[in-house]
Amino acid sequence: ADGRSIWSVGKPQGSVDVIEELPSPEDFWRRYIQDEGGDFDGYGKPVLLKNAARRMPAFHKWSDEYLMAKYGNTVLDQVETEKKETRTKFPHEDWTFRKFLSRYNKSVLYSTATTPQTLAHEVYLLPVMNCGGYSKKLAATVMWMSSGSTKSVIHQDGQDNIHCQFAGQKDWILWESSAPLKKRSMGWVLAEEEAKKDPAFQDAYGQYAGKVDVDNVDLDSFPGWDSLRWWNMTMRAGDCAFIPRQWFHFVQSPPVRSISIHVWFHGEKFDPRGCQALKVKGFDTSEFLFRIADCEFGYEEGKKGSGTKCILTRRKDASEL
Image 1 (cartoon, rainbow, N blue to C red):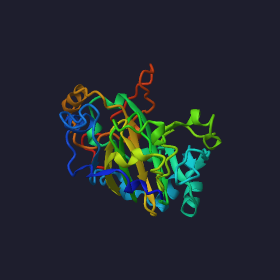
Image 2 (cartoon, helix red, strand yellow; image 1 turned 30 degrees about the vertical axis):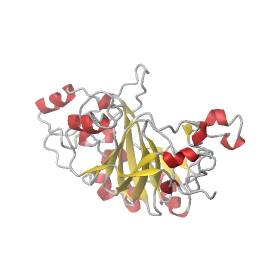
Image 3 (spheres, rainbow, N blue to C red; image 1 turned 90 degrees about the horizontal axis):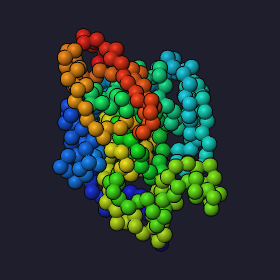
């Protein structure tokens, strides 16, 4: 049988939740990071946060001309050499932003770099992360940039993810964390193990649906894909999204310039003390308080000494946003 696109298999459930107003940090934790009392209680559920990034400097400023002039010497630690992800090609390392900007529109280059500290001054943590203890458990931040037409592999991440789009669009398919994807019968691979049997995976890493071609799903070999329920989400410039830990996802972008930044964190617990401390100091927890540049990253679960923190550099009367 002819294969079908990943968009035309399975049981579509419609869009994820879409909200226009950001809840308080504690409400956000209950409703989305935990989905208390919901279908995914304890596992979290995704949500599109419409226009949540529109007040950030990055949304207004980040044209190629601005980035070239201000950050041309900034180093990107990783630039992928494929737009349709296979995880089998080695990325470039340590390119200047100038070099990337001068080439990315005419090639398959795709930045998956750690968000450079220079640019991180123009991106904020969403107010839903202002308190609750997340700043002690910040794992990583990545800047995704390409001329569009990118496609990811189907995978899951072990961290909660807040992802903000500053240019272009990203279209997501999301499968719940309990979906039975991690089986050989679904084309799931552990790349390092697969490489011992299949040379195509020689340089690949991690676990993902490595045998599934998202443009041409082989339902004869992997019929289970046609019975999975899935949700869609479209992030446009100025939008952010929350994707819970362990939810499986596929992401693609149309053929237009795309820039987004994500923050991976561990949100399993909520500690209200930080919220109270900010209020006592006179800060409004619904405002943008922390830039990504104000924060450390590198937290790993169970790893001693990997805790992180954010420093409050913003004055109460700051008017940048």
